[in-house]
Amino acid sequence: SSLLSMLAEAGFLLSYGVNYDLLLKRAVDYMDRVLRGAAPSELAIEQPRRFELVINRATANALKLKLSSSLLLRADRVVG
Image 1 (cartoon, one colour):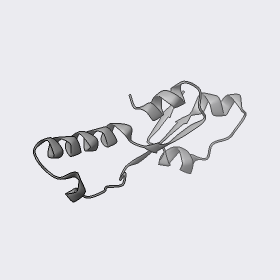
Image 2 (cartoon, helix red, strand yellow; image 1 turned 90 degrees about the vertical axis):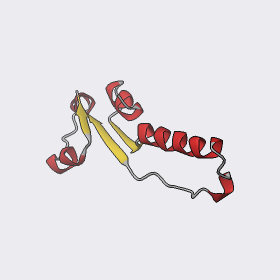
Image 3 (cartoon, helix red, strand yellow; image 1 turned 120 degrees about the vertical axis):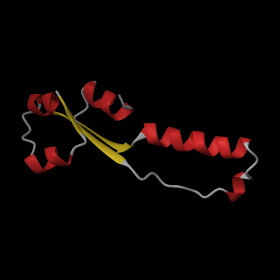
């Protein structure tokens, strides 16, 4: 499970950010290129392409918050 999912499962109401699993894979690819002889200055700088939204429904209920169906549909994952 991703870091964002773990935060939501720990009780955070919302967790939104980069997909760290994909970010790590890209970093490994960069390291592989450098170890194979590519100059780091020649490698393109990349920004994260994938962001995740994880919602903890149990926390929302405990706070007596009503989450809209559109928000829940946009979430990558809903826990609780």
